[in-house]
Length: 328
Ligand code: TRP
Image (cartoon, rainbow, N blue to C red; front, side):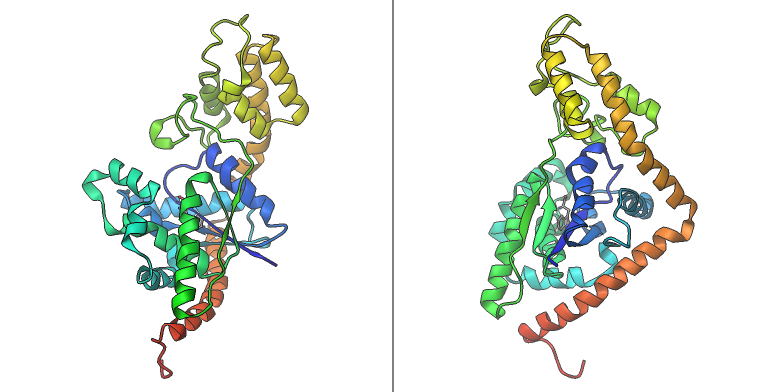
């Protein structure tokens, strides 16, 4: 069976954009692939973060993955730093990666702008660690959002460079793009992000989710109830596409265009469908939290399964690059 690898940062609260764009897709892929999903804590420390909150965020991110169906029976869930070989392979990859390639990365340039006081080596090297994450499992497919295509492309190039220099070792991984529509923030304008205060958290109680939906921006040209709206320009409609059934989506599409229904009514339908999907996830999160040892077991056994895989690959790599002494 083909192997899949993907990662998610343990930074802040996970929102419905992360869920629809990544996690929900990951849960579907477990049927057809051998899947490995990773909480990438070593990536998260490349920008300023709150040390005291990190452990809790790592655990919370893992809990959400499991609650969304990524259970240990179906796939591997683990924490990146628990398998230190990722960073070891990143070092080796550093030695075949041109600095110029890293300086060209869009995400690096954006983050360097946002974090001018702390443009550290880790931020520049971030895509190399990501390449190591993927290639250390010789994963063939990487389900990610569009913003990560460039990083996976770099992983392919690193695989090619390594293979050319040291002999065929790594397959070139391919992106699996989610077909989910891209949900914007509740401002209807920017990417959903906790720091922008325009996010709907996956674990938020129904009351605050409704409050965020109720006040969310719709088609800005629809001022009055009697104005016809344009679903193509409405972020609430995008959310319907992610959470509502096809017949409801076409009902809303038609009745928005003819002013048959108002925005509040439309939002109420969305809210109901959204909670139908989120409530069981929230319940499972509660159940998992009530069993204190459970997540520790999941993450420990996940890491152990990964360790077995990476041990062999790292032996192969060390041998190929000529640093494997027979007596160690
Ligand atoms: N950079 C990815 C993101 O921000 C997270 C990530 C780290 C990742 N390592 C990965 C994704 C390996 C896929 C494969 O979304």
